[in-house]
Image (cartoon, rainbow, N blue to C red; front, side, top):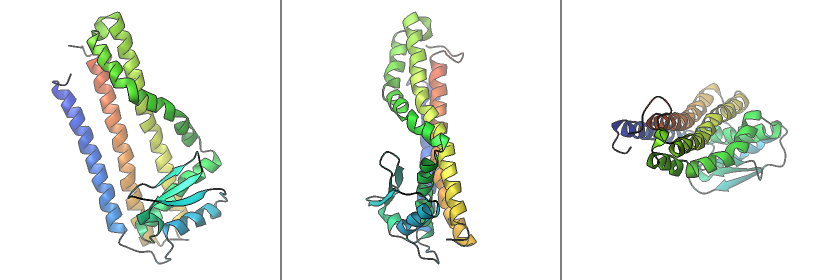
Length: 235
């Protein structure tokens, strides 16, 4: 397995995609965090305004340490904004804050993909935690060449697939949150020029989710092939 050059191609490609996406996000955020907006609303203020505009009540907005630690927690209905976003009125801060509010609006309106993703979290965590142990067990038991190896192979791939499904479900959830954010900001809170800056930050952030899905899918296909489930043969 670990001596298979295809394995290292898959791993290398996944790392390259992830590093490229992260670099794009950091570059866009750093650039547009230096450019303020005319309205001057901070990330916290814009979050509260958009929540009010959409009639969403009961959501707590808090500041959390770190950079790019922004997220919405549906279990506690808490919108957590990183320090560089919470108190900043930059294009980047406003865009990120509005994106996270998009998740709060999804939650309040019962957006189906978000509900599905939340329900899928236990399966993804469980699958991600033990899938590799099961897959390695399948190799040790002979893979598809033996009855036990075959069962373990199918089980390992199914478990790993749970994480791949999660990365796939995440895409429409994140894209929709960004669309909601940009639509709300357009005209009322940001000019066209400012909106373009916020869009570039959110588009760069979306690349990280795309990279995560592609990496997970390629890894899943590799293991399925190596185990003999896609016409390959376990050597």
